[in-house]
Amino acid sequence: MSQPAHFPELKAIPAELKSALSSEIIALGFVVVENSDPLEKSDAKTEKEFKLVGSTLLLKSIAETFGIDLLDELKFFTPTGKAGESFELPISAPDTKTERLMLVGLGDQSIAALRAAGATVGRKVKGKAQSISTFCATSDANATAHAISATMGAYIWNLKSGPKPLKPTIYLSISTLALKRTLAIAAAVWRARDLVHTPANIKTPAWMAANAKTVAKERNISIKVIAGKELAPFGGLVAVGNSSRKSPPRFIEITYAPKGSSNWPHVVLVGKGITFDTGGYSMKRPYDMMMAMKTDMAGAAAVLSVVSALPELAPRVRVTALLMCAENAVSGTAQRPSDVITHFGGTTTEVLNTDAEGRLVLADGLAYANLKLKPDYLIDVATLTGSATLGLGRQYAAMYSRDDKLAAKLHELGNESGDRVWRMPLINDYIDSLESDIADINNTADKGDYNAGSVTAALFLEKFVGDRKWVHFDIAGTGRSEVDAGENPKGGTGFGVRLLTTWISSL
Image (tube, rainbow, N blue to C red; front, side, top):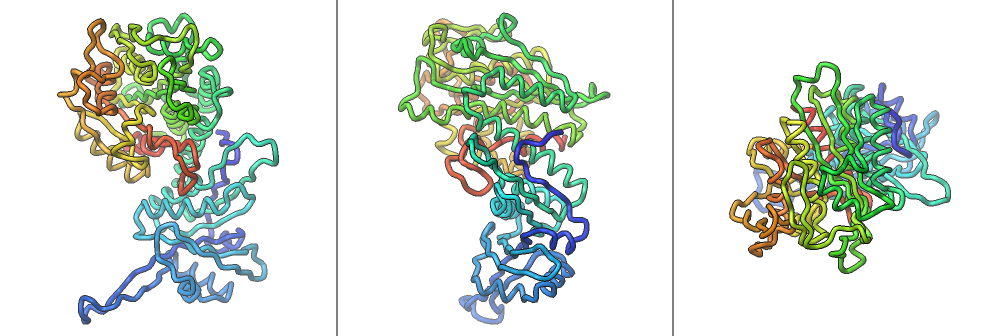
């Protein structure tokens, strides 16, 4: 499958020293351990000890080749040992290309620390035609996490007319099998980010459908796109999407179902795909809140990208992704506050606020999945509410589910993959917030004034999932980064791809 533009070349290192010396930069991990003499008093002064991570043969060979004492050099920098901290040494030796040795802090050597170190490595070669060999992980599981984060740190995207960013090469101390998994997931994260970063004058619902068709063709998987009059049963998608005559809505269904998969567990992923969100007639205030609204389709980008990775990962799971794509514009055909719409399956919703549009399109997708696809697991991913960030910030996505076992597993895999999620409560006492005098439910869920917007939005969605094992991820905080740091650029993060590919592979 073709890789996203500028995606780094990832290569396994077959012979540690030879491959390392063929790159301009060698990245070695180090840890700092503070020890005190146990025979001394408890307040005895601690001394820092430095340890390098990597095979003894590799470390010895590098020291001999370049004529340096690595530990002595490291002490000169007085490192703290924080994960991702880095120091560089200019080095050279005959018959080598290596120009620098990069020492990268591994903190407590946890998966999270290895990811932070990976992001540092990736950022070092971001947009450059340089090669770097990294020896910061000692197992395939750790190396995979480290390597995916390295590609995330190297991510770059723009539409500038000048010279294009160059493509780096990252050599990894990793097995061939783990490298294959790394490439699939990392490329999927890049794909999601590219989709999110694309501006809305390019990224219409039809453009999203064209990208989905490209994925389907490359991966030899099935796809169905519904548009125009055929969308009539999808009342939420039509109500939101018909606001833009130039960029009308699309329902996109793409399925990974290899031969013999009919008896495998069936997972349906539903992604919110609002390609731009003005708020409609309930326009966003202040207006600069709209600047980031090209990212309001991050959920759809994530679920499409997950499906794009599955043929390489080859899980024994059937997966269908539903992309609910529309633009929420202001026009003579836009829905109005006080409208009543009929969703797929017949449930009616009173529209009190046209800026609560994401749940309207998701409701159609969830109802369609429940009634037509009958999945074993039903997952939706959406940049749904600003409320989700109030308690969790931008480091954790809000997760809602009635299934304790499933929620616990996703929380665990979120910590493992780097897409961290925190379970939030579905509070039955708040269900009356959905009441409407003229329809089955209202879309703002603000009756009763509970001040729990993310919770009541999840309760709204739950009305459409039947008895399925359902999970809702509100990624309003995690789907977009406000700063360019660590794994993430400023803008789309590709959140959800690592978690969902890891979870699906575990079923």
